[in-house]
Image (cartoon, rainbow, N blue to C red; front, side, top):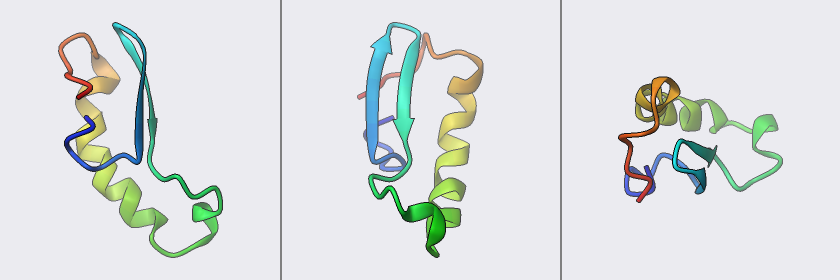
Length: 58
């Protein structure tokens, strides 16, 4: 997940749970570009929304 570059931050919480931060900018939701961040992140996060046990967080 980290190597994909789609997320600003990936934090392993447990073997089956991770926090994915799309952007480090807290004001990003009010700016152009957030939509593209979400578009970039969507295909990379789809697989883990079902099962994170086989996803390498590195």
